[in-house]
Amino acid sequence: MSEILDYGLDSPTRAFLVLVLSMEDRARQKAMNKLHFQKALYYFEKLQQDKEISFSNFKYGGVSFELQENMETLVESGLVTKVGAKYVLTQEGEDLAKKLLSKYDEDTLRKLKYSKDLLNDLNNKELLFFMYMTFEETQENSIEFKNLVKNKERWVKNLFRKGRINSATAAQWLGMSQRDFLDSLSV
Amino acid sequence: MEYVFDTSAVILLLEICGLEKQLRAFSAKNSIYITKKVKQEFLDGCKIERNAINVFSLCNSIIDERVLQYFNQNSSSGEFWTISYSCNNDCVCVIDEGFGRNLCDFLGIQYTGSVGIIDEMRKQGFLSKEDLFEIRKRIRNSRFYLSNELLKTLDSMCSHHK
Image 1: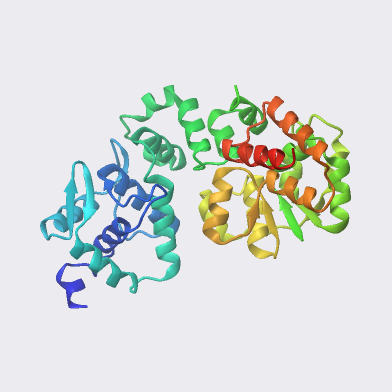
Image 2: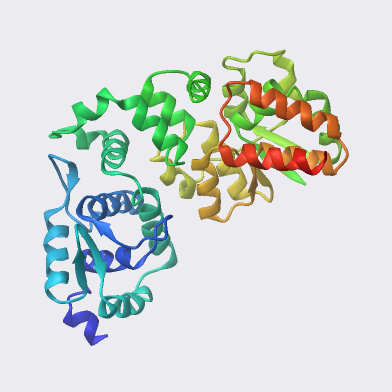
């Protein structure tokens, strides 16, 4: 217990960062880059309908400086290490993550896992497009959205084929009927 | 067994594969349901006799908040109503799209796909070996999307019966 307090893991922001890094995504990868942990936790907060973490709509959509600061602190404290552009838990971080699991209910942990599963193996463009379209308010100050929209058919089809959106959403995003969308996939 | 079908599965089985008669026979031994929203989505752009949809019984689905959050609070898709129904009833969800199948997996809902239903119909004696080959030909010749994984399953079912 004291270790959790020593590392400030009683703070949900920091605890969720450790927990999300301890989970495997669909490709059985745990590592996450800056964009992916930001978006996974943004999505998780929406699922939770919580405001535990503060997000602002910035150049790359919804991002949290609080999250970034906490991640840097976790690196400095030796619970997380950086491998290239990705963040990974150290052994000490993994051990603490196991202790943290008992502090959260099953539903919260399931939603966190779902968020990572949904987003972590998408490439940066697919991820940004998905987030901008799902949470339209995050398009507000975006420097990327206009460029992404130019190739929206490509991103929508990729997201559908990867099972991240359904055909109803895909059709809506492309402004066509569901049947036309499904037919367009085989062309 | 009780099944609740999503729109793309209904389109594939009724419209692409032309299995109305076989589904009717199957429904004598199994309960096959669709939600109102799925019926509406099927009829929107329907390319066959519209009454064919009546081979399915209508079921009453409710908004399940646990499911709704994974649809970004948007209840406008047939898939949402299908999964919501499955979440609250002892039935198998028939769904082909990756998103829905992933969600069923995640929520612990029992599911299968169009190909799984075709296999079940064959096992229960409602489809012959010749029917299987005809179904594969129709699906392959159509523009309708079915994932490579499901197509491979269908191929392996056919090769098993050569």
